[in-house]
Length: 83
Image 1: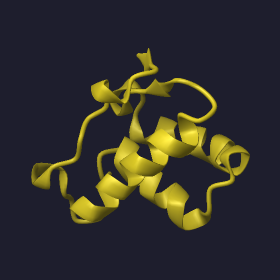
Image 2 (image 1 turned 45 degrees about the horizontal axis):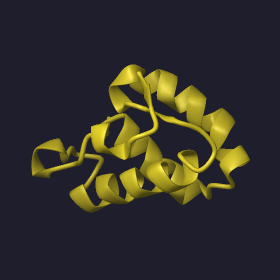
Image 3 (image 1 turned 135 degrees about the vertical axis):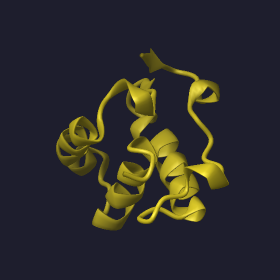
């Protein structure tokens, strides 16, 4: 599902924390996703793709968005819900 509204994107909470993603990282990833990815096109719900699909999408789109490796990792953590 593609959306232009960030209201429909999930907001990370303590229950989303995993062994590889802190709450702060998930929140930062959401902000970067909204601001960097949403600057050029509508945003997909993180549940629209699997974690492996997101990895492929981000490897293609992150350079276009000018994301650093660290910011790409944060977005990846957000869209894959810490997986």
